[in-house]
Image (tube, rainbow, N blue to C red; front, side, top):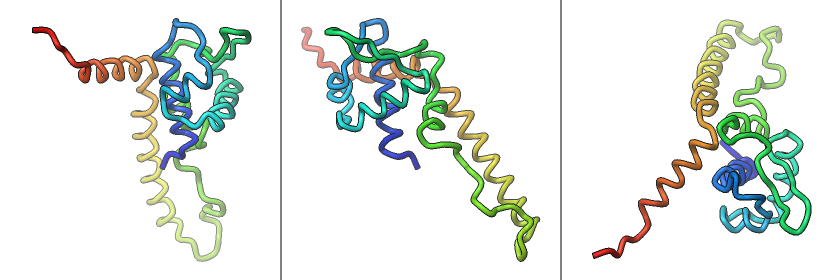
Length: 148
């Protein structure tokens, strides 16, 4: 399950990727374009900046830009930043405790690892340049054509 905060971070980076090369985008611009509450977006962009994913540009025409190429930022990187590891071990889940079956623990651990590997494969092979292009293509399908 992905939190709203993570979803907003992903959408903010998508918006910056779509505007890549077009100058900085303000918090208001990003919030309006992606339907993100502006009050949450400021803190999210600060966290993304601390992680080296965005940069802030000061001044009258300031705002936020991607800190590195959109192609080099994956959604997996962002999800792990905002949410932590996909399948973090539960506290006290070691097989040393009394009454815990080591085999049962190992069986579930193998399943969690396989699931995490599958998620990593999908999320880490999806970058923001590809997402921005997919978004452009999708929006072109809905453009009305009134030519005769």
